[in-house]
Length: 74
Length: 187
View 1 (cartoon, rainbow over the protein chains, first blue to last red):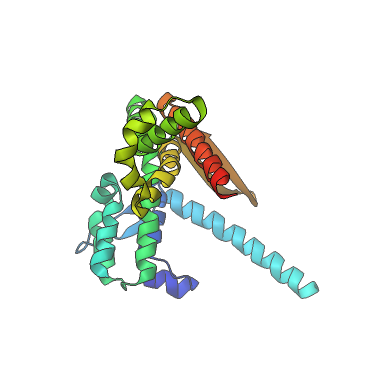
View 2 (cartoon, rainbow over the protein chains, first blue to last red):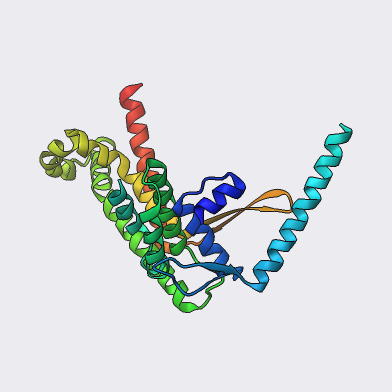
């Protein structure tokens, strides 16, 4: 999971930070654990998580559109 | 280093370890053992432990509040115990040099002198009120920082169990006396 995050975002998270985020997301019911596989626990988005992610992606897209537009006119 | 990181991960609260311990350990086993990782695990373990002491509105109920106050009370007592030797010494010095009653100071001086003049003993006596203050205030204070509507928001929630308030006030008074003494001696 850490490698995946590092590849798509360039951010290097430590294990403590990752599990801090997992704990918060689970408490907010945005992700849920799947059955453990060899001591590793995969997680998946819940319905609420999917909708939250879609909202955030939309907000970011809006931000990028505005930034590109203003960058082009500046 | 790996062993040290696993040892530091024991600082996570028992409830957290019961829920995430096995998978966290599996992740640590595969992850690069470095100073960065050690500091990351240490910082997050301490943050999780402090959060576990704070009241959680989502949990509600009397049991959580009772547990919270018990833990705050225990840390308050611990703070009191830590600053007790410094308090006795300062009180005795005030009695002798300001009030003119020297019985207490003269009684404890032979036992205290070798401790206070040792670097470790001196450090303990000087730091005790600050440590006591942290022990008294930390478990009854919850600070939340967040980013809402493009602005940084901060909320501070402080509870005031009597024991912790008393320990916090005493520690400030004690630190004040010690600072005044230091100023009088050195300036």
